[in-house]
Amino acid sequence: MQAAAIDWHVYLLTHSPLALGMVGLSRIIPIASLSLPGGVVADRYDRKRVMLVTQLTMTAVAALLGLLTLTHHETILTLYVLTGLTSAAGSFDNPARQALVPRLVPREDLPGALAMNLTMFHAGMIGGPALAGVLIAATGEGTRGLAWIYLINAGSFLAVVGSLLTMRASGAAEGDGSARESPWRSLKQGLRFVFSTPVMVWTMALDFAATFFSGANSLLPIFADQVLKVGAFGFGWLRAAPALGALAGSLYTSIKPIPARKGRVFLWAVAAYGLATLVFGLSRSYLLTFVALAAGGLADLVSTVVRQIVRQTITPDAMRGRMTSVNMIFFMGGPQLGELEAGLVASLFASAAIGATVSVASGGIATVLVAALCAWKAKVVRDYVS
Image (cartoon, rainbow, N blue to C red; front, side, top):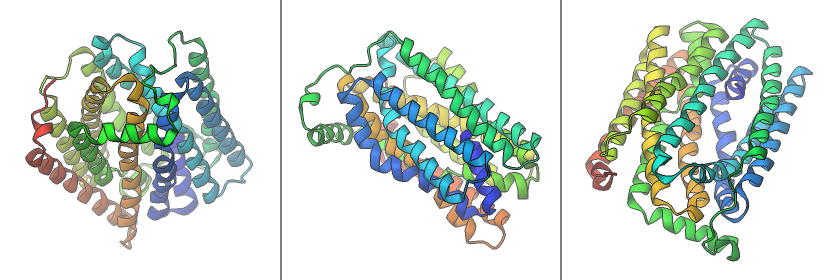
């Protein structure tokens, strides 16, 4: 809900494609600078305690966003800064969270557990933006609905905190000696592991390229308002569409395992993601745009599941926080930088609608070409079997 609300809030204040793209920049700067330290922290300290601190921090940020908006004291700068603070907390939260998941189930059940975890995530990604659109539209598409979205989000973190407090599994990492080493040495050890594993390097790089070129969710307010003319209510459902496709994919993959030739499945999924983005950019039909976004979410889910299975099964537990932090820079950096790139390209045109179309469609074409290049050059990915 909050991610969708931030985009619409920035659009209300500026009506600028570039300002929407800057939301991605406000998210990627903390991710790029703090993810690696976040991975070291996740491998040196109790992961549940780390998550408690990060979740409470994000609670405070959401509450402040709500209060500032409710009292009409928000500015474009405060939106960027508070979005950056949320990303900063996430830079420590995500490595701890991802490293904790494999401790909760037996190894043979990990692929299904990862798929189920993504199922719940995408269920929230469907309901959240859709409800955000309803709240914004019901309050006259002004900022009052946005304030309530931020405050509801702040309250929702209490459920996460409660879950962590009642979780019986240990949050302590299995020791490999890294806790006794200097943080810098521990970080270098993690970087060495990731970048000396070819299949991990190639899948990270391809995921970054795909999400960089096809990461254009920040432009959805322009498509909803100026291209499709469906307003905040329609925007909410467009923002939820990728998660709807991803939910369908995660339910399927949690029941039916992905084929053993996971490398080829991954490559086809990335290419399909690019094609879906191309259709989204060129579409002038609300229904076709919705279907294209959902198809892109489905393809992205399949590639995500493959990458998570590969990296979690080949990484020792004591290294999982650092491994996740390195992957996080690529996994989250790609979409956020992609939003900035999309906003920059769209701002080059006098018409925001034309600029958004060119930006999204060209990104889809670039993604397909990058997937083809990887399939040609990266034998380690193409022939990967597990």
